[in-house]
Image: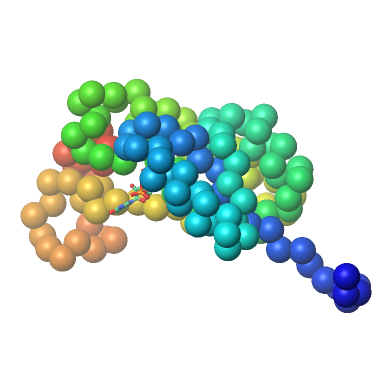
Length: 141
Ligand SMILES: NC(=O)c1ccc[n+]([C@@H]2O[C@H](COP(=O)([O-])OP(=O)(O)OC[C@H]3O[C@@H](n4cnc5c(N)ncnc54)[C@H](O)[C@@H]3O)[C@@H](O)[C@H]2O)c1
């Protein structure tokens, strides 16, 4: 084992996914294996599980959070609307609350979707366009 300089900072990359069956979880497991080969360890869990999130923040002093855990899909909202509320609304709030109390407080980036531009007819879309005319529950959440 080589000696570490005194100012060495351990870098940890950790992912969280609940491996739901919106599409074949085998694909998610295959991605997990690829990520773990590059040093990104994946924990199975839900972003609504505040106790788990707090525990992870206790173990790792995360400096950044890239939030991509979401219920995607326009048509699936007809079948399972509560999954959008669970992951995209409640889950986001849970994650933000835990990040707000973490020390250090991490920088957060999260994904949106062009669906937010809903009934806009002007193309190409611009981030300055209206987002208050969603055409689906996915867009709204
Ligand atoms: N794929 C695209 O073309 C595209 C385009 C625009 C925006 N986006 C946005 O990017 C983000 C990721 O999309 P994606 O295409 O990678 O979707 P994806 O379904 O492949 O990935 C989302 C992951 O989040 C996990 N997940 C869902 N709910 C969770 C929860 N409550 N707790 C923990 N894990 C949960 C799922 O198991 C899944 O592995 C979404 O916000 C989506 O709106 C995607």
